[in-house]
Image (tube, rainbow, N blue to C red; front, top):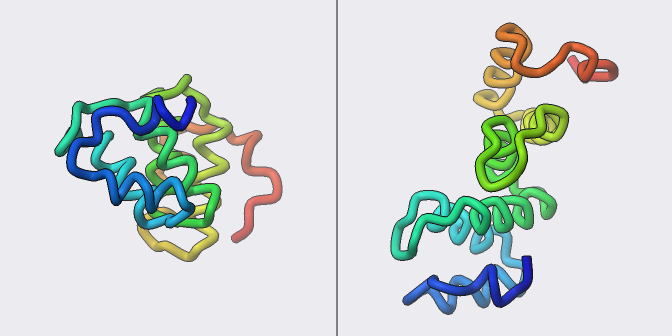
Length: 122
């Protein structure tokens, strides 16, 4: 997705977009959430995915968790349980209790294949 495509329809959030584009991870996360929820802009799951991914790659744990959910559910991207597991694990490594619980839930429900758990930290 190009920068122009990621920017359109953000209305009054020009400053938020500029901060996100300049690498501010909280702005990236906030912009993703606006697109995901359709607040102050048209709901756009592809753009939400783009900005959650940017924030997740920069270490923002809530974005890592949300990115995992998008991969798990195929929202804004193709469903990919291996990538979902990777991002759930990254969020869990940040010692976020809720993410550890969700990761364990995915394991128990068989949502993520057990072969992916080789090397998981306990």
